[in-house]
Amino acid sequence: MASTDSKHDSDLKVDIEKRSSDSPAPALDAHYDPGFVKKTLLMVDLRMLPLLGLLYAVALIDRTNLGIARTAGMDIELRLDIGERYSIASMIYFIPYILLQIPGNIVLRWIGARSWLTICVVGWGIAQLGMGFVPTWGWLVFCRIWLGVFEAGFFPALVFIITTWYKRHEVQKRLALFYLISILFGGFSSLLAYGLAQLSGRGGLLGWSWIFIIEGILTIVLGLLTWLFVPDFPDKSRFLTEEQRKMILDRVEADRGDSVPDKMTGTKIIRHLSDPILWIMALMFMCSTMPAYAIGFFITIILRTMGYSVTMSLILTAPPYVFAAISCFFFAWISDKTQKRALWLAVQNLICIVGLFIVAYADKHGVRYFGLFLVNAGASGCIPGVLAYHGNRKQNANNITSHTKRSVSSAVVVAAGGIGGIFATTVYRQKDFPKYLPGLWATLACQFSMLLCLAFTTWVFKRRNQAYREGKCGPLENTPGFYYTT
Image (cartoon, rainbow, N blue to C red):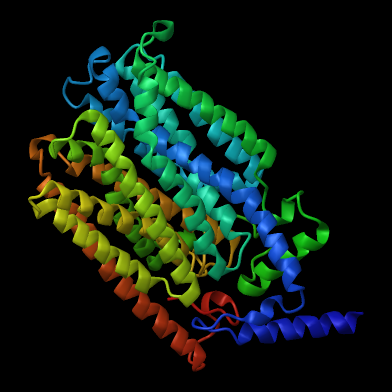
């Protein structure tokens, strides 16, 4: 028996050593029945992706529904028209959201995925519910701070969990699938909020209060469902059989060598944070989220400048998000199919750039509206793309081979996304209404910066892969057989 195990380990090591960044190893699953592998992965997909996608969609709606509530009467009742009160209430969310990314992922490993996600979702649901009863602007800011506190640990936890269940080249399609669910729901969020505002007068509350109350209750319910249905990490899951769990762990171990979690220490955190490529990935994620947040906060306003009524502006908000969802999944599919990340991210950057120029300089309203389709598609597709690319390294979701490194890097990258949110809310200034040209050019600068980052990381990864292939250096990321995905 020992001889058989030794031979199996030897064969597996050979399989790993034969991998390259351009050709995945089909032998990794060779000792498992393909039907068994497919059935188990489908079970994992159905258990995780729909609920996680819905949760993130609700998180996105909860953090960006302030604008709709403002138009529904909150502006007058809480005197948000005084000074920069509205801008402060909008941006204050992102401060704890950024600062608590890494601490949140440390807690994640201590108490488990299911418990941590439940705490996050129920916590921000309570904060959202409380916003429906705030009597003053100060209490609104207080609730927004707690919204940022609890949402801070949510998204990096989702990314981290998904990447612990799949091989590297399976990750982006899954990330895109739950993300496109959030895109579709996000596209219709303004219609939902507008409908809830029609409850104005019920229970002595204005429409803006009902927006927060109903969405807060919905979030709390979803938090309880999280406890019941979202699985923990593969090594802690209970919905799989022992054989299925072993297969999942074997696949991850063969692909990245990190199926068994390593212990989080202060030394490891400092070492992971010292990697310059991590910060380049974070910059790229900020450049991706910036236009996505800008669209989320300002698409209805831009449509209003085209002469559409409030109702039509809300209705016309949805189609660009539907188109973005289709584009997002297509580029995720082709990226996994070709096992290329940087190339397809660059294509989506160019789509976003073309759209931004159209929105900025086209005269006809129909053409500008078409530009919004391109901006939203390019930006939305890059978000899961960067997460998968940053995971294409040993340190990131695809290219990372240790749990602690993936945890820290995911937190840093997602925190950078929060900075993109602050950037988006500050460069589209009221004094630049209705064209917002400085804001559009700032968004363009982000896209050109990301193209430069992609060129640099591609060059670095290819050089490192080539050096390892020619025996000029030791194992990349201290993992024999590991190659960066470009």
